[in-house]
Image (cartoon, rainbow, N blue to C red):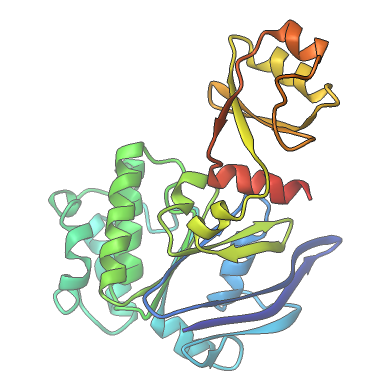
Length: 297
């Protein structure tokens, strides 16, 4: 469905993307996982024909993003990270406007957006600018779908919305997948990576790895330990100064620790660790542990 080959893009001296390549199958939820500034938005804008790459190629359903940009615009839905609908128009007026752009109507494709739009339809006469964050995202998603696209590009769709709305939006995406729509979604939230069929870790414009979340976790090369402490910052700094520690990062109210020799040796007479009086518990790695490990390489 989607093929990306060696896409690169540079803004002045900043290399936003560097030889990015991947494939996405029909009806797949493919996640681009990475922090702000990793190049996710630039890649989305290239794939939706809004800007040109410096080099490389990409095609959707066999259509080239440069030569066949009109076909792609008619068959792709794009939901940018920033709410970009008309805030001085009502909910219904926004949806009607986008349907008209694609020579269709709300009634013609209502079955596709029903599960999403029905939640905000009671507020159809409300100005879009007066909606809550979660309702804005549902309206934006409805507008991106109203022309029944083959592929849907969502740039950080859950940023800034509450946990309940995040859960609802991902449930909607799984429903769209069941209808055969290909979904490419970017997010800085590592927990959302587990909801994708496959993911690509992206950092500083480069793809670090591509696989299913389960296989990425299974390939984690180290034993990892969790430490709970009353003073995260102090303990973090002391552990990072310890030569027996390979890496340590904070995860909520705990620290995740990897030792240089691969595991905690309780027989070692490590006075620095002893004085901290810490209880190390071996745990399974998370997808965030995997990203941190790869980004440190």
